[in-house]
Length: 64
Length: 536
Image 1 (cartoon, rainbow over the protein chains, first blue to last red):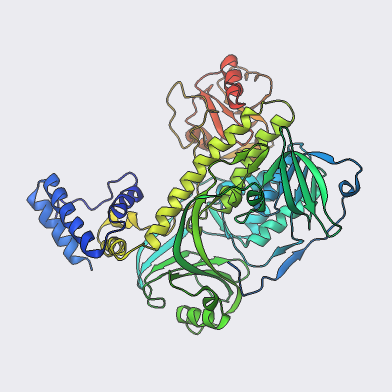
Image 2 (cartoon, rainbow over the protein chains, first blue to last red):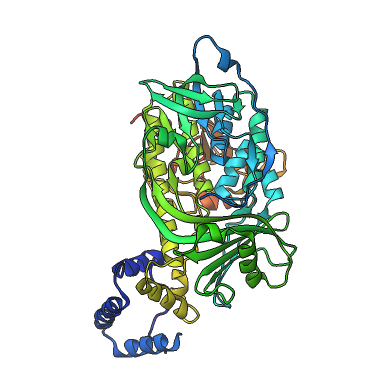
């Protein structure tokens, strides 16, 4: 676990949260889950590093 | 929403008949302020201190029980200090700076407001609104220029080109009064707004919240504690915050389907609070159930009527941005109005009140809307995202930064036509268009003090010594020199203002920084003052 950055990187974290929440405004849970899946693929490709991706998956799975 | 819990009066004031009521011709006053809450009182006191006679009317004859506003921000306290009541408010209030956020019963994040040290006023105090109002009423009553009239209810407003004609009802019947300017500080349910037929634009949140003040002897820390989905209030949020007199503010989210009348029944509230507080005994002081609005008037100035505070804009309470921003509205408006009334500035200056305070209102509404979106998600899909942030918070710092239980009020930095752009870069915590940061200083008599309490109420040129004799400021500007009038023993003033020897700073009458230079140029200072008076 070394490459994944979990420290806050947004200058305005609230603005990032709002962008994500507004993207799902009006969607039901199924539509929001589908949106999240597409977002995960797009962002994973943007990162383009399989090690970072695997670390991110591990962090996400560990959090409940 | 009406409280079933009848609000008891804490302080009563007498109606007194004014000679204006029996005058043969309608009396004309320079300024009438409607609403003697914190914002209207602040406006009236500031006008009085700036030499403008003012009539302040209120439809009640008392200050009501129930805290309503409890968190007073540094900037509000600095304004109150200029009025002469800041120190006593701080002494009476509870100073706090730590906030804790819980998910279930687990602490996931704590914040320290970490105020810059060496400021006279703390980042926040908690104090019941009626105590602040009482202090301001007493201050207003000391000022000959403030004419405070209880049981005077505005029932009609008629706009004219250069004045407003008011009809005011009293226990002795109605009377008419003319005002060159009317300041509407009559709150969220502003009758002035209704009389002018104006409406808000913005959002109303569906979720309802129970707000309770309870009296409880508890040796709990002085912290703002906020829970998401706590065991004692499953699926909802809760907030607990200390006030003086062993009084605690508790907010409980009730969801969109809550029955407002049912939820205000004391036995029901008591049962909810017992789940939270266990066997600790407590008494209910005040309860109410609210829905929050984030909205504002499109314009704050309508002819000769100027809206301030909740009459102009409303936010949810989670950032302490309501009453604090209202008092800052009053401060922003009053120095401008005073200069216009005295003929030292044109009416154009009043327009900058709207420019600057709509920026502030939009900033407050933005923060307040974001907080409310986080606390009360609109749908299951939005709740899933919010819960993901909370779930990641213990392991990922970025998620902790996204937890939003209210972003607390700080003064707005105005992007203002009244400011003169910097010619050269300045670092430090002082910002163009923002209130000057306070600094610890040494007074000429050797005593310790603070910078802000030394500044006058007019334009001030703050200069830093460079060996040469201090510059003589242009007309309408008083000079105040660090190194001559006061000392900067710790270098805090120089650091915060990024001052080099000979640097000069032009401060507006509200102590906002409007221009600065590395060296003095009389013509530039005069031009910057003209700009800050709305002349260019």
